[in-house]
Amino acid sequence: MGVPILPTISTAFIVISAVLVAIGWGLIFKRKIEAHKKVMLAAGVSALIFFIIYASRTVFIGNTAFGGPDELKGYYTFFLVFHITLATVGAVFGIVSILTGLKTNLKIHRRIGPITSIIWFFVAITGVMVYSLLYVIYEGGETTSVFKAILGF
Image (cartoon, rainbow, N blue to C red; front, side, top):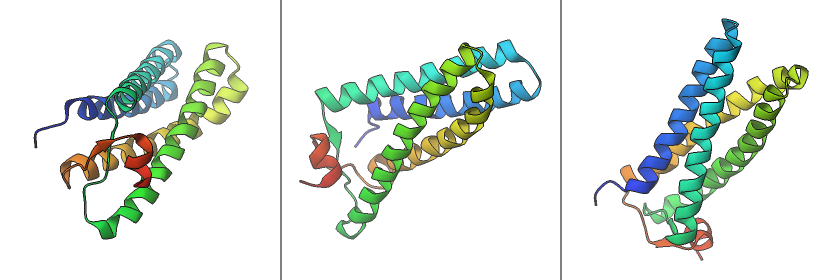
């Protein structure tokens, strides 16, 4: 099996977004506010590109089921649900962080920005792990509806 192009591209965009968030942290510590703003917006755009690719693939092609050993499927499913929950929370926090930063509501932005960043680092790490489990460590299973791919029915 070759490299799955859409999952590889979408996973790359999550990694890029996390790298940009790390760069944004460095910039704000150096008080380079305008550069911080631009880099964090680019991180948000990268995450949005991931989501567009992922959602489009899910709707038009389907999701890839776990193709590893049956005895690991329960652990994989638990891990995947954890990742999806973390990504959803991270996305909501990310939107709020971007909006409060752009509207210069710095009291809230300074409070949730670091939390959002930490969540997003975990989203990127767990996203790469999901990708690795589906396409690198094990050969991907059947590509099917999201419910069947995640829940196995």
